[in-house]
Amino acid sequence: MKNLLKEIRNCKVCTAHLPLGPRPIIEAVPNSKIILISQAPGRVVHEKGKAWADQSGKKLRQWLGVDENTFYNTNNFAILPMGFCYPGKAKTGDLPPRKECAPLWHEPVLNKLNKVQLILLIGSYATNFYLPKDGRNLTQRVENYNEYLPQYWPLPHPSPVNRFWRAKNPWFEEHLVSELQTKITKILK
Image (cartoon, rainbow, N blue to C red; front, side, top):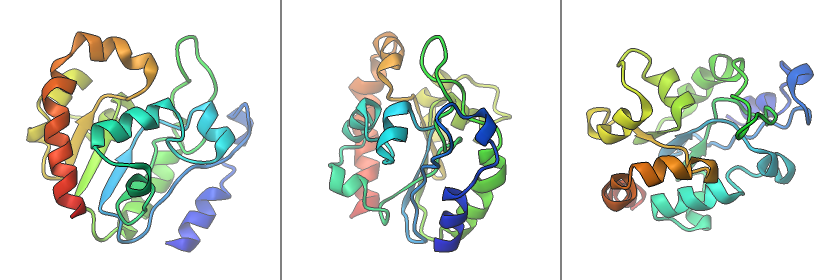
């Protein structure tokens, strides 16, 4: 795993397309229990070099019901974004993750993880990649999360930009977050 992560962190496949250059963000160990598959690092995360070290990460940790020490313990959580580097800014939010990363690197990483009990698919890019044939949109997938268990649990993206989705779908934070926290607590015991 160490050699694979070193190779990924030195990846330069899409350097020409990255406005701030490559800085792949990934964390995993063979014993990681939960995999976080999300969009791509934002600008703040790129600058800090630490996954989820922004407002999105703060909201995600709230949803999961974990503190920073628990969250950043790679025996608990592996961090495997769809795109490993900051893709740049769009009109609203960031550009989509680069399409090269997931097909190139996800399978080799997943093959080295042998204690996984749950994969959290965070946002539409992750759910569309891992659940391509179910015909549902993100909201429907999040609502029907139990149909994807025990392997996957679809989630909306915790970005502040996504506050409108959360306001439009209050059932998520009112009901599903507590179910998610219960599941996370059971896995991390």
